[in-house]
Length: 320
Image (cartoon, rainbow, N blue to C red; front, side):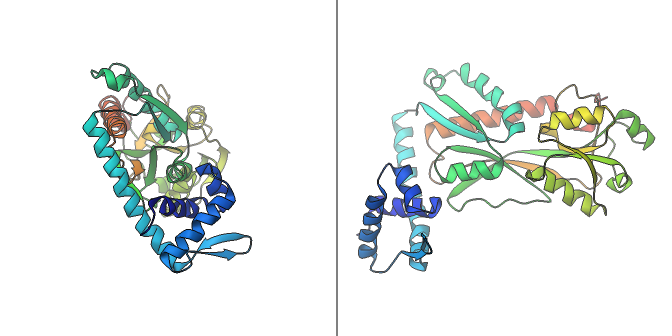
């Protein structure tokens, strides 16, 4: 009979890539991991790993076993979640990985909602936040360094999710064109009027750094409009980009959630809309864990409150 602990070890090896890294995260020695893998191979009857240079890689049998392990371990996690829910207990700490604009716009509300929650036991939950770009957040989730990942994808830039994860749409975040009010008037655009990007092929552009997915979104969106943007400034901080737009240094595309308040620019949806979908992602089987369920509920409330305040803000009214 297969041992669940050894299946988990093989799953960790698939995630972390080396025996040394697997041993480190499981607080074991590398020889102990190798010994357990050898025992697993005897139980299975075929090799599950093979040498590839100085590292190990999964054999076809190992990959098949990891796929089954994801289901088995997910079911075990689900059983643990159900038991925790039945006992009404809550974990003392839940870890959240979120990209910057979600961390800025949503997580403060989550902390406020938690502090005044009617359930005294809920108020004891500690939310630990780490700022990560989506790829980093999903990697942290796979490696069990976080419990909930807030990530995004664009209509022009879909995202792949880990196989052993569950995704739920939290909110839709429109991408807006940010213009200096005078530039908007010169283009004949009234506040909130949809903008045709083809008219902005020859203006200076302000973008994030190339290592961010938002940069690729802008490249693809401008490419669909038939031009390559003439980039004059780059910053990973959208508040910097919007401040530069307010100084008429150029134009920018930014998700609504990333645009700071009191921005002093004219905001316009795109004639061909681009949307950023924001997801909560958890490991399979953990959805009914009380703390995970509570955090998901609070995030939904935070998103609803944000929409109530800013939901009509994308029309550009009052933006200037």
